[in-house]
Length: 217
Ligand code: AMP
Image (cartoon, rainbow, N blue to C red; front, side, top):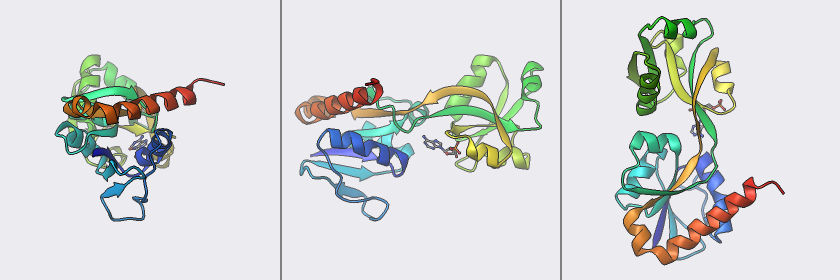
């Protein structure tokens, strides 16, 4: 049995066409079903639905053989024990720094002020500001980060930005782009060796589908 870990939302939706390219069809909709283990049209392949931040953990410890997870989640997890063969180029967005429109970020950074930064992505934020030589106090949050600068909890946030609509709706402005983010295929290293025959064709089908999507016709 091959077990694939996915999370609800964009990652699940955007992985479906890649699975279709590998001849795999998920037989239930996780938005409508309460089941956490979803069957596919292939009796030897099943999908488990886990929280996005838990995908690397499931794959690392073998609760799933493979999974799809954002680069952001992988960096925060550390990526140990995971084989990462493919950038799937899905769920694309960017990791950015945002502040209130009336906060002078450039001056604060230039003057060497100590910035209060709220984020769920503490590893990425710590590394980014350390590389710039900016002193920061990191405040770990689990959601609604946009609220932090509006309530005085923090000067800045580090968060994922896609369209920019969430920032705009909360009168925040993006002042620095830290990195581009997309989702990766991650594979348990032992599973890759022991279940080669089943896993290799999935990697190849995903890889061909990505190439077809990115090469202009
Ligand atoms: P947007 O308003 O389109 O810029 O989306 C920003 C909101 O969606 C923020 O709350 C982000 O944390 C979240 N978000 C955007 N892209 C992603 C993604 N690829 N994965 C997870 N969350 C995302």
